[in-house]
Length: 143
Image 1: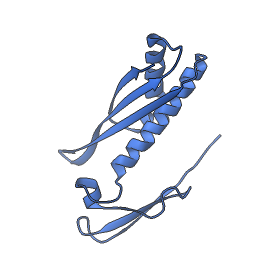
Image 2: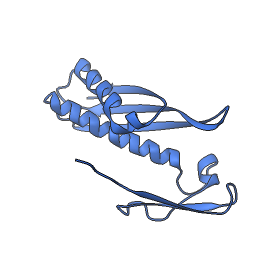
Image 3: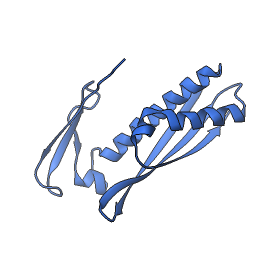
């Protein structure tokens, strides 16, 4: 099964004085503003790093649900925050790290099974595989 999804960015102007709009095929994002101020300051709109963070958090959490399902466990709730670090390096800017912070309520799950499933999800989710950066994980079972 091959799936293809699209996202579109339109940009006008220079780096600092320009602006752009981001849209997704599903329409969830429809001409959402982004630009220098939303990326490097606190301007209104979005930026590529927070979109990567949301995608990684969603992918990892779904992968964890799959891993737990294989162990016969169904989570009550899981919340993952992905913090994406954009840093100045020698040759420009780079995403140098993603930190996943998971808090899960999984009745009946033991700590060992939970940690093993979380590690497999971190390593196996397609977004983790895509990112060429250091990925860390804090996973807390909060039943």
